[in-house]
Amino acid sequence: MIPFPPYKPDLGQFSGDSTDVMKNVLRTANGVAPMPDLLAIANSIGADVFGGWVYRNAAGVYGLIAATRTNLYKLSATGTWDLISKVGGYVGPLDGDLWQADVFGTLLIFTNINDPPQKFDIDSGTLCADLGGTPPRAKFIETVGDFLFLSHLAVSPLAETVPSRCAQHSLINDAENWTIDGQEGSSDLIICPDGDEIMGIFSRPGGAMIMQRRYKRRLTFSPGTPTAFTMTDLDPTRGAVAPNAIVPIGGGNYIYLNETGWYMGDDHQAIGSEQMDRSFLKDVNPDKNTWVQGVNDALNRIVWFRYQDGSDTYKMIGYDWELGNWLASDARVQYLMTTTTVAGEMDDYHVPMDTYVDSKGAGIPMDSLSFKGGRVNLGAFKEDHILYQFSGAPMEAQAELPTGQLIEGRGAFVRATQLLGDVPAYSISVGSATLPDQAIDWKSVSSRSLRTGKCPHRVDGKFHRFRVTIPAGTPWTIAHGLQPTFEPSGEA
Image: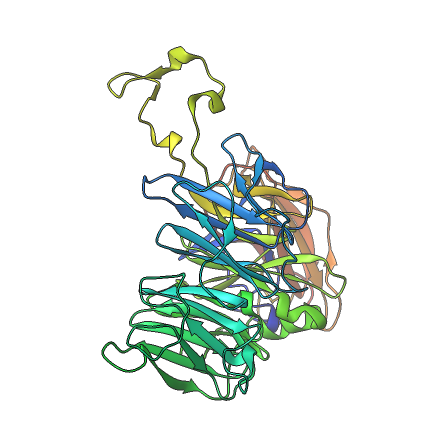
């Protein structure tokens, strides 16, 4: 058996332990698994999406909010979008930026650099309103312990500072008090003296991390001191280039895009070097590399990123941070997010009353969690402005094995191939070449025989390459590799 190797497009077609072609599969420890297709779960929101968030209120009910550039909407149980913007709407974020949001107590607070921070009460709210106090306009927001942080400010309380290198936190336990008075626990301004603009801030054990374009700095909570947080310079040379591609994955660890490629953690672990960096940096639109956006699919332990190539086509790549493997998908998504089913009432489900029963009978219990929502999954908006979940039938999967010689130093005649796994339907194409610098000559596609369980071939050559295609909708769970049947050919 020739196992499916990791996807490392940087290494080319002759790398014996990697492949440069693989799409719409997830990795397992000993093979590949299907990637679910996109399944629509809501109506169109009507415009390009600039943000999306899942929340859970005090009653345990889940909700989902999404943002266009100029408005905020809440998803209803019937799949429609209810406007929750304050009267008049908003200017919205700059090109390439997104709305940002975080929960502080019962408030979901939204920000972009052009509008005052907005608050929405997740327990009882119907419309947003300006956040109280005198919070600065800012690109980024993060709840850090008992404080709310705003960073990359539009203006600074101190005229001599550079607002884009500033962060300000609220009074302890009060997101609507921004008075800087020098008292313990009061609002305070944090100034990053160099390192270019702040690209993001995220909470971590004991404090937070400030990511700048060319610097990483750690904030440590320091109770009993004149300032609530002390700042430590962590890395003075390597920062993040795309604010929405800084993705925490838990335990203080995170993945981010630097101008030289993909990295993970405080120690700048090069997860893309000799795997994805060259291919990605060649493909991404150089004018939109700061627009790359990512989200952590915690269920599958994958961080997915969407970006635009040189023709502005949306593309997806992913990094399996548990197995250390890169992935790719041809799903064309405009915005990635965590999604959830939202709370509903009986009338929303359009089923007869006699199918609802108490918890002791059969059917849908009156206290079913279906009415609270909360089935979390990776989701996305496409360019049709419809919200989808990756929860459908398997997508069409394709993988190629690296080009190589089946018999070292001479030709081979391939008679058949068989995919090892629980895949009931698939096709395989075999390509060949006489010299390594020749283009692969792909033969006709051969489908699996129901009689032998193999794909028949008649392909002679010194170098071979195998392409496996599993049709969309095929029910399968794992494929381990390919078993070719071959013999020496007359070509020495």
